[in-house]
Image (cartoon, rainbow, N blue to C red; front, side, top):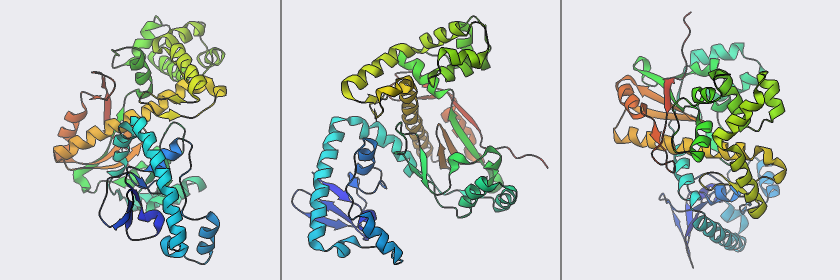
Length: 398
């Protein structure tokens, strides 16, 4: 068994490769599993935290804080701890790495779908800020948005985390929080290609309802909500069908749906939609899973740690978590196609089920060809997930 202890947690300039009976230092990139503070693609620490376990720490928080108070932020812990303490840390880490790698071997999701999707976050490139537009927004921003906008002034990369939510929904750990940027502030981003480029977003159409429908049945129409309205004998229009569908998927009760829709046949609508998506059957299966295994899983096998008290949210957890994987797996395919065709396109951000790109005008046509027919996602047979391609923002004429 071999693993890497990252320089990020050692405070050194080199990684350490730990093998059966020895360890070596290297400056070369390694693609093995790493104890790394969640900073690399194949991070044992990410897998550990996702599954409610704690990675080993090289020193206590008290020691780290003491150095920090002295104004020392970068510490070579190998030297600071001494060789004997460091050897103890390596021994502890070896035991931890062996257990985590055994877990990964037994749960292939973490080495397959999860790692493939996670790789998207490592392919995101630098973005360009329209400084004049940013200054104008800052001038008129309230306190909350002022802090957020100021994060973009430094033009640091957005550092995502996949461990802050039980479903794996992305959060921002450090850097500008693109996930919370208001729509009216999106024009702070500009193309590095100037007037020859545009900021484009690709997002999945009705992603989470489509996932649920495909789990139950093989073929699903492009426009789910029109299909659902028709199934309800057109007693509701498409918009109301969408509102009812999302409410039921997210765990709304019959009574609350009645209050939301304010139509006489809300009970019938609830039953139709629940049957359309197989919600009762899926919920029962998830309840059975937590009773037997103490955990539920998404479509691909990611563990979701919750309690039986939250059974009304199980379908929501399943769907949202699967949606995270489907999005990243889809974005992986899109980025791979962009690279293969050598298009002048830079991926910038992920905003849940949307991929934000900086696109040169000469590559727009090819990008449309890549996305126009949708995308086949592993695990969902021949079904294509439809995509929308649009401008990330539209400038208002002054």
